[in-house]
Image 1 (cartoon, each protein chain N blue to C red):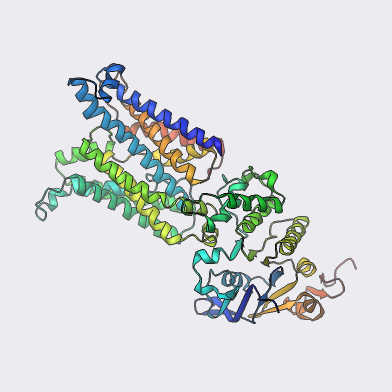
Image 2 (cartoon, chains in turn red, yellow):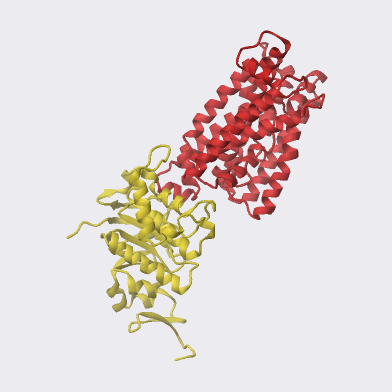
Amino acid sequence: MQKPKRLLFLGILLVLTFFLINISFGSAAIPFEEVLKILCFQAEDSVEKYIVLSYRLPKAITAILVGSGLALSGLLMQTLFRNPLAGPYVLGLSSGASLGVALVILGSQFLSGLLTINLFNNTSIIIASSLGSFLVLLAVLIVARRVRDTMAILIIGLMFASFTAAAVSILSYFSDAEKLQQYIFWSFGSLGDLTWEEVIWLASSWFIGLSLSLLTIKPLNALLLGEAYAQSVGTQIKKNRILVILATSILAGSITAFAGPIAFIGLAVPHLARLIIKQSNHAFLFPACIILGSLLMLISDLIAQMPSFQFTLPINAVTSLFGAPVVIWLLVRKKKMSF
Amino acid sequence: MTKPILHTTNLSIGYHQECIAQVDDLNINKGELVAIIGKNGAGKSTLLKTLSGNLSPQSGKVSINNTPVCQLTALEIAKKIAIVLTKTDFSTHLSVQELVALGRQPYTNWLGSLTNRDKKKVIEALNLLDIAHKKRASCSNLSDGQLQKAMLARAIAQDTPLIILDEPTSHLDLYHKVFVLKTLRFLSKKTNKAIVFASHEIDLALQLCDKIILVHQAKVKQYETHQVIESNILNQMFPSELIYFDKNSKSFKIKDAIIK
């Protein structure tokens, strides 16, 4: 019981280290001592201070929120669906969120006659995105009740994803260039474009999602034995299912709204966490996923904006480039994945 | 007369509108080992589900310690009935200790953290089933017999007066079948729990059980084990062209077997 705690402690230290490294690197070279000074509010007003406080710090915080939130929602879904391949991206949640955002960004011009108020603001994007992922998750869940087959559920998730993708392409076809560009940039995924106000929005949704999911720790442990056993030890299956759906759609929905659809973190991190802490207890898996997700996202972001580059790669490309091989390696090495 | 742990009155079982069987009133006391036997599809599983509160009866009621099951919440039922199922499709990352500790869920707080009392109960259960040396092993690395022991330990840790098992001996070889059933007998005597299990091992059940519940032709009836042997009931259970029940050896024999 001591070992997982030590690992979690080590993980927190690593996250803090990479948080500082992440803030220290960027296209403008700022010495490390200067960064520390700025973070401790010891520096005088300068361009460097502006870059660190208004750009790098919110980006690093976003990386932590995004990585931990996606990893957590992946874990919740893997246990709920009893499926090692479940995750917000694979089951079409991100696509649902995309459709919601597409409707707000691209569809606003069609609806502008009806809604003269400014539709393109934070609240409407969060709501549309969460609603999109919530509806897709609900649809997958309803189908999953009828179809018990693991593969079938994944294929159905895939079908929902291509359905929403089709709806998005129809919307894009009729949109003007400026709106389309806005949407395309959103879909690349980005951690960097958030203002402090938006970071606070994201943090609040993250916090709500996390609080809801804390209530599912005990039922999720029981669900490791299957629904029949879970019920026999007093788990309220339906209540737990609703909590998990709410928590995952708020987490995945709000993250997708602000950072775009980011692949693989949700799928790969829970497996890495299980591999490292060798525990099935969600009371340990939760913090492990949060730490590992944050860490991977901070590192991915570092790679996305390599110091020598003059430009930033889309974060989604980086997580996929590294995430896909990790999942393949896991499958090959373990022969069999489990949840 | 002792108060029965499990008691049914005017029970009839089935799904939706379709009645599968009428149940003569059952009385199962503490410390008793009871086998439910019957042909494939006779309704053993339906009976088990109804007794464990998973399926509501079509009419009549099931009572545990004199409280009707239908009046209890899921959590209250969890403190009275533990189950062991045939299918084990759970997460393979679980260690034996974690698996057994999950049996303590009805008693733990919202986070599921184990108190000293919970930990003590887990260790007791592990020791009782002689599987404490495997407590750190992952369930995927256990043999079928060891896994069944671990599942039994989980049910014991749940600390209920009644344990219901669905075909605990399927997939096991003869030795382990006997081993598991003897363990059940040992547990029922040692812990004074009532243990009810569905099984196809009629021969073994006759040698080990206190009572037999027979599910046959839409009737469920409870017998003392010797009644089952002395009467002619078992001969009627299966079509007679292949096997018959031999009272002297208390077992089924093949008709016209080659070796006499």
